[in-house]
Length: 245
Length: 174
Image (cartoon, rainbow over all chains, first blue to last red; front, side, top):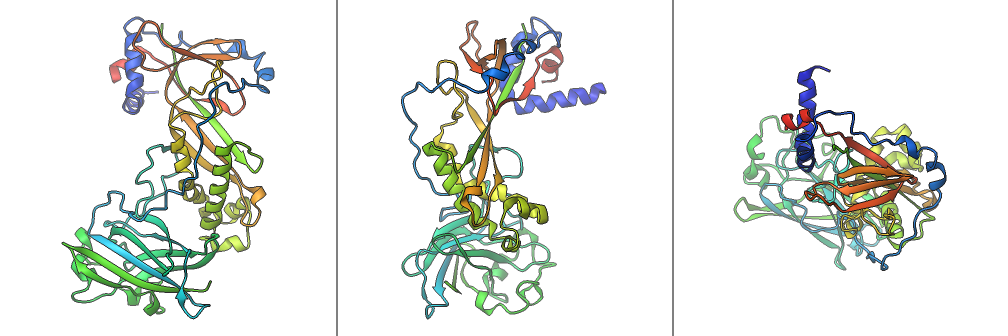
């Protein structure tokens, strides 16, 4: 390996583990050679085969006692520190198979992109920190009340190439069986929240309006929300979605 | 003398036969979440088994991350101490701040097929010695001449995840 690359690789290690650096510094004053420090693991080779089948029984005080804990999707405020104009999302779920009466105890998942048009990535493929906050920003779950209502606090979504501004919704019955996957569309035109927010720092150049959106272009009247408010007071989104339950 | 610093990995397997209360909660809630999230993939009607689904629909692999938030509450209840792995005094001792959740197998309609793993990555430990099948470890960062140590037995699903040798170049580069 070239010395430059070697040093670079060491730098990476140094950044990710300051504790390690401290631990090593002390020793490095005494001796500088690597390779002589490896503990001999060969001596364990003959015994590992038998030790594997039994291990020491716990002799601790019983516990900790785990308690039922909901998925971390379950929260009303899904902002997770994302910047943008505050928006309250009020969704009412009705039952299309029951005269469109309110559907209670339905699980409602919503997710949408941030002001820049990016979705959270569920924490990626690598290991996750126990400090999990913001791993799934702008994703949340609520259970409908007796009047079929759920409320989320979030930010007004941004947009990305090829799509009109939208919020994804997945409605499940109380036992988790999917009832409907849909999306919420936003009103367009002068004076609408969409026009007021004006695509945040991106502006609206290159924006895909509902009429040309590949999801909404086949008709979106049932997915269209009413959105009111201002950038100073925040926005309110209201929509009623009928699902077959 | 220089000692290597290691991070251990304990891969905990949880399935329908798991008996401990914590394991059962993780099993139940991760399966409930799997059933919900897998319905975001329309192909699940054709391929209800997780293995089949990811074979035909590679994007379904992200179910690992989509289901993970079902168990974060239980991870937090561990208070950053790895479960099951005991030192030779019979106590849990291994601290962790990172973990990875994965679905091994599952099935939309068959709870008994659900099997998940949580890999716990320990905080750095200085590997002082090996005594028979035991590792003599001490939490990194102890500045005193006398350090507190733990003897831990090599066992299935416990492995050395990373190893860092200490030498002079490392110190210069830092």
